[in-house]
Image 1 (tube, rainbow, N blue to C red):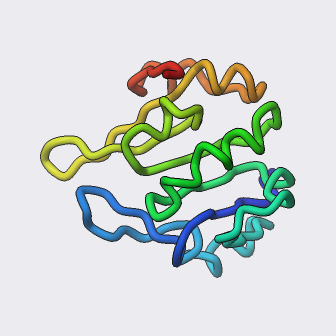
Image 2 (tube, rainbow, N blue to C red):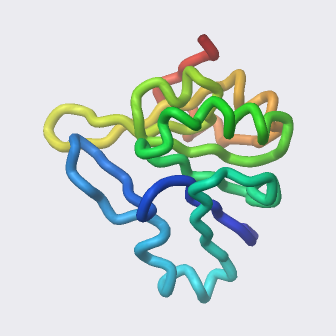
Image 3 (cartoon, helix red, strand yellow):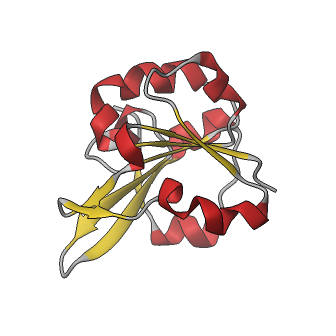
Length: 132
């Protein structure tokens, strides 16, 4: 069971096709019964390595590489929503597709380094990318 999700960025915002979307922080009450704690860390401090999932929003794009370097080697699922996040070493990145659809890409190099296991069914649906 997931115990901690950390969101790094302003106002826990997520954008798809430049439209602001709801994100984990907006649904905190709905997640409470699932024993998940959400936090925002705009300063990117070391306690973030205690998280199981770290969501990096596009407002923190410039700090993404430092964050990814900090948590490298930890079993943390890193999730982003901006171009280049997966190639920088993030594991999962959402991107806009035509017709207001959302696609996702998975960096298998980053996944393997973290030790996280991802279903082969999910991998077949993803666009696979590697580190730059």
